[in-house]
Amino acid sequence: MRTLDVRWHRVAHKTPASWDDWLIVPAMVLTVALGGVMIWGVVDNGLGRPTPTAETSGAENQKILVTKVQYVFLCLELLGFGLVKLSVIFFCRRIFCDVFKGKFDIITKLLITLVVLWSVGFTFAMIFECGTNFWALFSTAENLVKSCVKTLKLAEAFVISDATTDLMILCLPLPMIWTLQMSTRRKITATSIFLLGSLTTAASIVRMIVYLKFVYAEDPPADRDITITKLLFWSLIELGLGVLAACLPTLRLLFGKISSPSLNKFLSPFYPQASLLGGSRNHSVEHLHHLHPKSNSSSPQLDPPPTSIGLST
Image 1 (tube, rainbow, N blue to C red):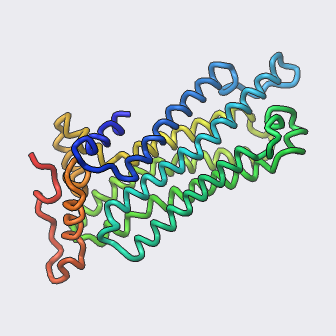
Image 2 (tube, helix red, strand yellow; image 1 turned 180 degrees about the vertical axis):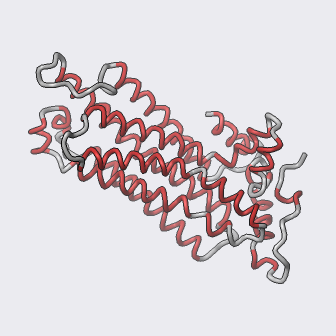
Image 3 (tube, rainbow, N blue to C red; image 1 turned 45 degrees about the vertical axis):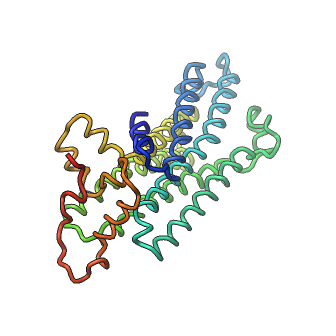
């Protein structure tokens, strides 16, 4: 919540909000909502408990509760994942697209189209996995098989494609950084800031491994309800880290408020004050034009002046 607040500090200082700013707000709301869904499942004795046997008292009620929690969670998380992915892509376009035109513009537009289709497609597939027979989701396994699509294959396609799109978006800004006229040290610093988003990708990969082990593991099979709890837990971690990663550039202002020179030095090489913390977007574009190799092809590869890339004191 604090990183989102700091992000909108830029908007409060007369910098127009961009698509990446608007998209991250509902993503944050969905993250909080999914946390509430998890709490609901735990408090009502559904999540975090072993799958009850047929003879266990209240076994059917627990099964129905876990199915309800999982259904609501999946429908909401798909929208959240899509919003976070789109926010990161639009952020990359805001920073790089005015300088790196052509292929980068086309690639990001294709990624935006892919993510929108992915998010909307899987959301509707999850909502209507039993067609309009929603009652089948909360009844017996026999009714589930008769009335619904092959939900295991659908979920498998989701976890694999989610990790794949995360990797694609993670790699998106890296070639742009390494074509800028900066020292290797500064390029590594800028790359490391973007690669902090790899924590989100790591969470999606962990969830994918948990799911695939559950589906394809040999005997004895993993406990169903415990596995569902793990999957929902890692989904919430992924979404929360995704929101944080999308707001990473604003952390410079947050750390600046606690007067941490070392953190400021680490975060300053790539994010000029004008572009992210209240200045004009044109200043940001001019700054990147200055670092673009084609802007001054005859000049040696020198570091940009400190005054053009750091925060003013």
